[in-house]
Structures are given as C-alpha cells and as structure tokens.
Image (tube, rainbow, N blue to C red; front, side):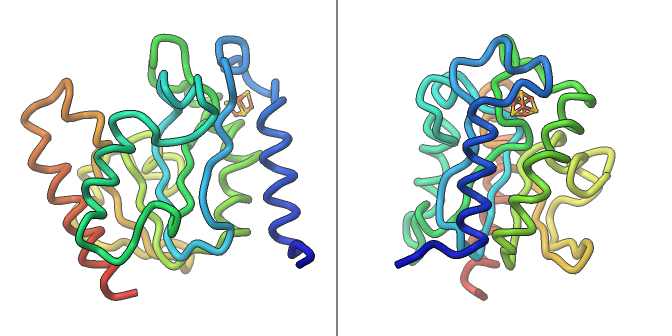
Length: 189
Ligand code: SF4
C-alpha cells in the first residue's frame, strides 16, 4: 500500500536527522536517533536525549529506560510498538551532559515539533525537565507532574525520566507514580 503523505514526511525527517549537522551535538554522536514506533501511534513518549546504547544502535529507549518501560507496560494491553518513542534532541550529548538550550531549540524546531504534529497523538508523556521545558515551557517537572496537562489542544503527562533512579534513589517512588498515572490514562484511551 502506498505510504500516506504524513508517513512520507516522517520518513523524510528521520532521514534528515540521521545526517543532521545543525547543532554541535552531531560532532560527538555515533548515530542520530530519530525515534521509533507507529506513525499512527495514539501515545508518544519523549525523553531527553539518546544515551550510550541508543547512540550505538540508533534506536531510542533500548537501554535501562527501555527495559523500565517494558516492565511498566506488563499487564496492559499495550506494548512499545503501540507508541512512538523519541527524544527532545536526537544526538547524544558528550558524556551524557544535559543538552544546552540552543541545541534543544535547534533540534525541536527542526524535528520534534513537526513529529508531534504529524503523529498527532492523543496523549504525550514527557520524561524529564528538558522535555517538559522544551514542549510546555515550564521551569521544572514538579510544576506539572502528577496530573494530565492540556496544552495547545493536546494532553500531556510529565514525569521524571526513569534514568533518574540510578543517581537519585529518593526519586524512584516518584518515577513509579508517574508511570502509574500513564498506565491509568492508557486504560482510558
Ligand atoms: S541534536 Fe538535533 S539539531 Fe543537533 S545535530 Fe542532532 S539532529 Fe541535528
């Protein structure tokens, strides 16, 4: 079957991302990571940036965050193929540092915002402060976590990034709460 116009544009964006040199993050990447999943997904998950395993494989959420997501989805009727999963910036920052604002702005304005428009999900989960700030313009995760937020006609859940559990043990419970909220909202779709 011929691909839809939207699917062709999403393929085009992915191809552009793989060779993109618009910000300095291209210098240190192994592979850019455009995102993975159904172009017709009802739910998008957006993290911060690719980590080591993502950078090596070109696929998002294949490391510990991905395993955590698989664990969360156990017992629901959904698996990760039902989502579109991507990151705010598509190239791994050196030593996993936080992306700079100019890098985030460049990447989202060229790629992420258009991916969201084209996929047009009913629900978006933003993981971590970088994603929440870039998409919703909030200052911190805490400003918006724990509830569904309506923004420009779309519904969002904001949570801590699952990777935070490894260096902030105290946030482990909060990550669980965030994904419990996602699970509850998924059941309503
Ligand atoms: S992070 Fe985004 S804008 Fe920067 S080089 Fe990679 S794809 Fe391009």
